[in-house]
Image (cartoon, rainbow, N blue to C red):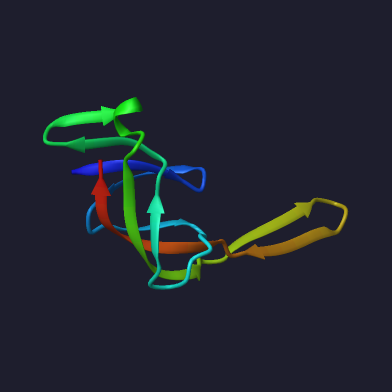
Length: 102
């Protein structure tokens, strides 16, 4: 059984027991979160979507909140002496999928 959920502007395919990274949620480590924006659920060889999954939810537990590896942004314009170096670390939340309720 798996579900497709939308969170942080992205869609993720999840199954029970999966550990996924999503955009930063404002939850503490160990807290339980619920994803209500379920796009589709596949169970027992049938795919449910639309009105069939409007009451579906995916429950997960927050494993940790951290920052990803640094991405270096380097801007350069030739012949003018313009150089600019920036770094960015995107925060994320790692969650473990506990149950899919369809």
